[in-house]
Image 1 (cartoon, rainbow, N blue to C red):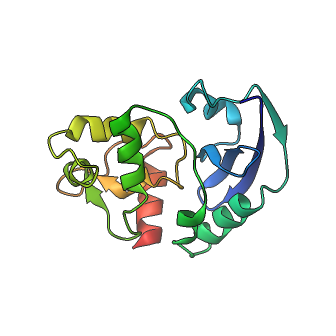
Image 2 (image 1 turned 90 degrees about the horizontal axis):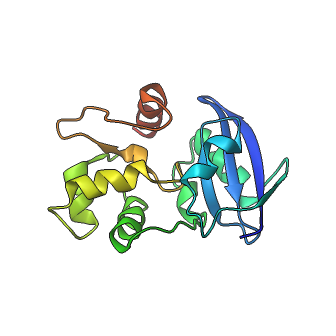
Image 3 (image 1 turned 135 degrees about the vertical axis):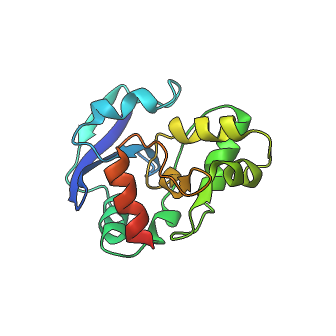
Length: 165
């Protein structure tokens, strides 16, 4: 991919930046003020060569603001584009089916992705997820309810889970 757009908006957790393809699909996103923290997570085949800053990314910006304002389901309608192995892509799709306020365990995530024994692979898919929020990996917790890891920190994950409960 040669070009993409980037925008940062303020949220209650801090700045949220999204990198979006020309067709509106999210390539990467997260609670950071810079695309430099996001681009390494994007598959090389999708990674843009050039980023153009925009104040507003249309549907993506509206969804980020609406989600943080309490419309928890708005993120499901935003298109996402990620590339990985077959199971990783399946695991990312499975995450998009997890309802807000109903966190699941990594074991449940593996089951939902179609490979119950692949708990480590399911956790790895969460760790490799470039489109945070739109692919809600924050909804996966450790068995027993412990927060687990999150690229944007445990405080952000706690806020998101509390916001959705």
